[in-house]
Picture 1 (cartoon, rainbow, N blue to C red):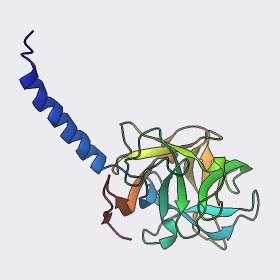
Picture 2 (cartoon, rainbow, N blue to C red):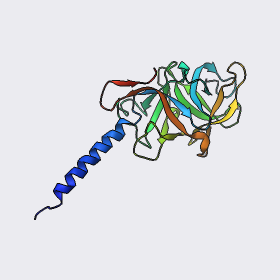
Picture 3 (cartoon, rainbow, N blue to C red):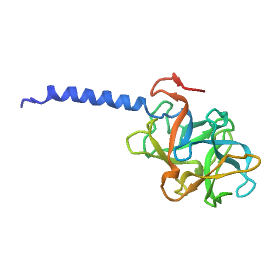
Picture 4 (cartoon, rainbow, N blue to C red):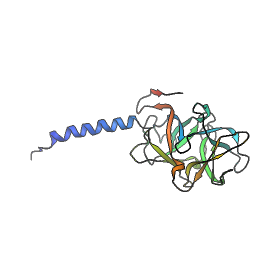
Length: 212
């Protein structure tokens, strides 16, 4: 039996492979260090060695206006060690951890009320990147991979809330910083976009330096 369609099919397969490789090159990858911008409120996800005065008493997580604040860098890691190979594109629906670079604590949420909005408290928890199962979030996006230009949501695996900001501002000692919390419904307050950072290339050890 003669396969007359094969010569026409092969260029299409090669084209699809090339396009797929290009898409992966523009994806956020495991091991990358980046800042996350809340697209509704134009503030970056931030943490620092300031503990909540209520709720869990753990390290606070806020949103800041300044694009150059060194305490706004987070490292993309897998649900467990080895589950997110360095340089591999993060898939939509994948479970990840976000580890705060300067303090080594993971983005975390649990059943405590947030101090300003009375939503669910979001904190930074653990030591040297190791915390517990409440540090795990899934990336919600529309394609195959988390693309750098996409606005995505982070849904908490343990409590099913979305990482959100609704605009409440703190006073002393972190005046002007916004409350970060978990909300039970997807809405325009919980979209985030990858911003400044070092993006590890897929299957390559070199990195693209945008700011850090």
